[in-house]
Image: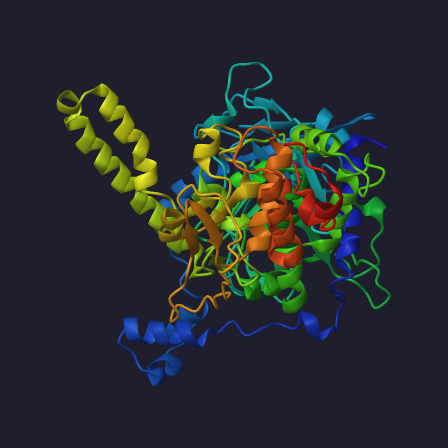
Length: 609
């Protein structure tokens, strides 16, 4: 089988899969012609041209003009299309057996390429294939110099057969060393729904049959948006177009093109242009195509940000998830209640991850301090700087309702509130620093340095280190370790100061409701000690993690204090919120909090202080 036939076979296999979603054959109601008259468009036309409906009905010329719609676009449409086209490349498909043909792909982040699963189905294909940019003609009709880039599946390769897409890392320098990938633009994926409607037009930039880059601009109407994960449209494509971007009139990507939809007879057989049963020997040009199908961008981004990130956490830096549950439900066709739980905490996947994480520990009831410490230290593979707006508020510390709660007071915040509050803190620190800088000559360098050091304490972020920074001199990786960072309004942060936890015999805090109408309490302070108002079990498990991960780093807690922390942990069962945090942090920095995974561990583990 030659290379072009191999690509054609994959193309036909993908077409067959579309029958599971929607069968079409002559006489089927689903292919009935829809009305092309848009009432809103008619009304707008009447207002703009100062006409009434009678004049429109009686004037055939006017009627024809408005029914076809207004196809004019801003003149910059073409220039923007040229810019968008720079991200599109031809994929030269190779396997262990040799060259297999061509597909299309495009950049969706600085070094991340997307194409169809059936173009690059596994890392073996990606390792041997390569991306060819500039395979097109210049304005004078001459071929542009080809830029060939190797793919690096060892850095990133993720594929989803159902959604028929693969994402792959691309090397930043061309194979000949003369060009850089950054010279090509990339198409940022917008996960929101509503980027196109039925009756709107789309454009596709592609390499049909592996030939030079083409664009399909004419008669490309969106025909079907009823399927959760896919859209359908009428346009001209061929097998080499697999993996091409489908654009709306703003040059936003609305779909990843992946298959054509042919006419079928009642027995499910594909028909050719003569209305007879088609066979593969006739080739795709003889297929009676109805329309094409693409994978919704919203579905792809949802899969990247909920599944792919489990294996490749750095994808969070490039893709923003769709956060509205109802929008995700529409996009993916998942029941809202199931989606809400699964998207917040994927229990099955986390249990599988937990099993692999502790695989070499034979018995958690007999595990030693040193064994667990070695595991936590060895798997802590990614360190983060202390930046709560980037690493804590967005995902890690969210509660099931999508809000943040101050760890001590339970006061409610939105993510945006705390990010804005921290930005204000940054500005206040900068202004104070400028003021101090003006006085350095008068107060002296030592006093200046001391005052600068106090700036963070005087203007704290709305984030709490349950193991205070001053105890470990703000050193990394302790300072940015997400397992002991929690949202906390600055008032409570300042109130706690750097006092260690204690259980006061005469203090019985009543958990606050989180209702803004009730003045929230942070806790109680006596003799340089602090007892939280809320969530003592949660902070205790975080502190026990820290003592296990960084033995000997802090000298604040003695054996009697460890017993207090253990009692707090046993007094409050592990919450869904903690499981969510543990899962998210595991994805981001590589290690887990064993006191969340195994709550009874606090009874059996002997601490080495």
